[in-house]
Image (cartoon, rainbow, N blue to C red; front, top):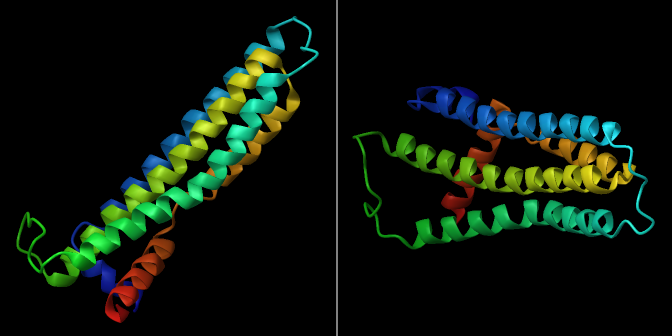
Length: 177
């Protein structure tokens, strides 16, 4: 399917821009908090703890959330697609008369946005946990892990072509099933 096929879908570009703004906001918020955490800890003269339990706990939870950021959105997607496949034709509410393709793409875009936000929110929460551990215990590993997770979040900002490819895959799966 050529990319021009989606140019005819009303609001496609606006929805792509919306999800880019949302992910960018998550990125910006966690980045600003990381800078604040670094500044706060650099002004703190307390010695580092002998047993940085919180750092290890937050690192473990952070890695776990990173893994969940890939698993949970896939589960949500699979569940939503299964519900869509089992729904009777015309069962979904219609807001305005649109072409069947525009309606399908609109639903898929909403599903993509939802799953992307879930995955990114899990990563953002992990970044916040690393920053909090750094503020409290001052272990560099927390900031390093937080920075790595921030880079992962940076690469989650979707490009238009990525969204179009995702839509193509979902539409092909629907035709196969």
